[in-house]
Image 1 (tube, one colour):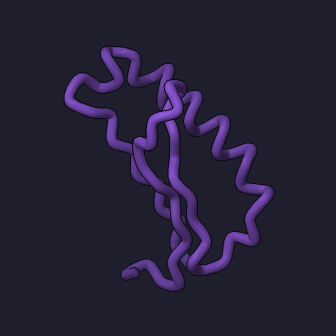
Image 2 (cartoon, helix red, strand yellow):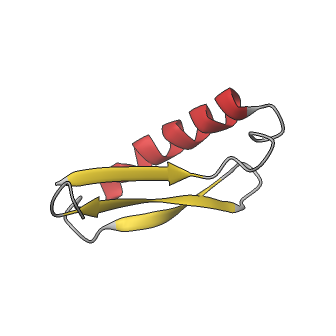
Image 3 (spheres, one colour):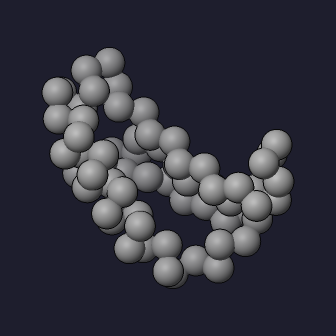
Length: 65
């Protein structure tokens, strides 16, 4: 299986706060993963601190999917 997390930081890298914002996203979604079975097909939108959709995480069956 493959876990993929993709986050679009925008043209300005979260207005120069990329490290802080990415850290928050990783902490939140890292803690939230326990609510999922983590099987192929699982996934969810990822939101920044302003509750704007900025990406997605997903589980695929193989590394090529």
